[in-house]
Image (cartoon, rainbow, N blue to C red):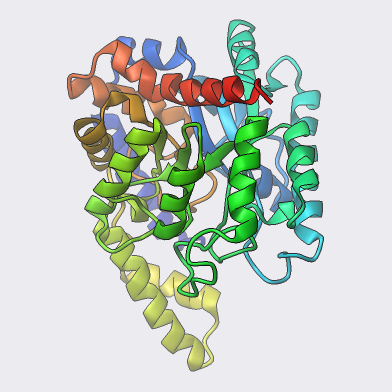
Length: 394
């Protein structure tokens, strides 16, 4: 949603002022740029489907492009093959079609700029592309709707390069109940969903527990023989009652499983005040819509009158700190949700050029370089390798 020009200028000015207050050392820049940096959730595929831009070059909009990725040290993004969660897509062939179309777009990206990007299908590719100074394009499917109840489709998407599947999105599907959906059709996973978890383990497809209901999460924990990921989730400790995030009990179960939670940067995932702002806006919007007002006009006016309470870099670091203190350094990573959360990104972490700010924040909180490497990519690589190794026996 676009703000009035004056408000946009003010927001940008405040954001830049805060970012300029972050004194990023050469050491922090070096750590960000000289190590494998994996972000497990970036929504470029759907972004450029809706409004095409050549992200091999600097772009006027969005949170990701090649120059900014290089500036920030991002060299291994998981591009999200995002499928909207609605009845128009579920079970009607449209999910399958859209997923293939989005994968085509990522292959075209790599083919268009082979000196900058390369498709990554395994952990060895990540290391090789890093040595070659190319950005690895890995893929995760956000919403398992394209599987359409057919295990052959699971193999199809694995063969096309998808390496994790977020089982559901904002509505329950044929695989799992969603954390956002009050209709708990399956009371967790569907019978097919339980079979799918087993098959995903067997072929080396990572299971992503972001978005699914708590009941579905614990059923995955019982079924999965390999570590799972929460590709773009944050902590319920800081957003009480927000089931989309994970609570401490879930984190402890994740540790037992050996998995990793990749922290989402979106302000409404990070702070309760941002979460509450959306709830209040949506309530007011419903009343305005009932009175015949347009959604677009209402949202712009509401935001102008009620400025959005952006989270900060420090608050994102609080989420990382809590995971580390509760379950250890081996279980946290980065899943920013860049290009997926709109104008809600924290001050100091506005796009893919700003990972050095995060690294500096970690250094300031006395994390060692070895610990930071684990957060940037080491932990995600570990669970990916474990999935690959487990699948070799089948």
